[in-house]
Length: 159
Ligand code: 4NP
Image (tube, rainbow, N blue to C red):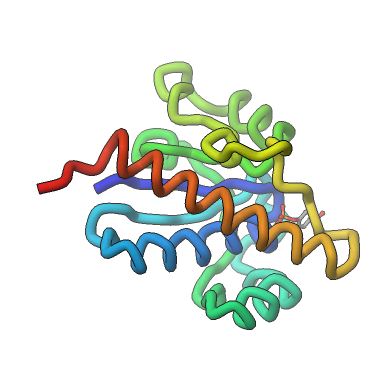
């Protein structure tokens, strides 16, 4: 079982979207018993909250269910248990690096590192308009496909 954790700042917009989209992509590939997906925030500002309604509604329109997700902060156990800890932007990657024990630092990456895109970050949509949320969904779908290909190549054994 490969455990993937998506991380943003508030864990109410970008990382829950990534979690819901990637869970579907994994399920559609028949790999749900081999990949576990979760999300968290570098802040605990929205602990226990549902994802932002703008993210939930947009994702639902494309068939992705985010309604079961509740915001939580990254914790020490995540660095031990997760296999890949994927930050949505460089600021969150930097925050993770500051609190991650050095022996687990190899688990930290930018989510879009796996994708061949002209951008390396999923921009924070929280204080902007609907186009920011649409961009998040688009980048997350593209990043998810690339991540799944990476996992199939490097982790998942075909039998
Ligand atoms: P997220 O977006 O990191 O994608 O969940 C944000 C959500 C909340 C805040 C900032 C970004 N905030 O400042 O409360």
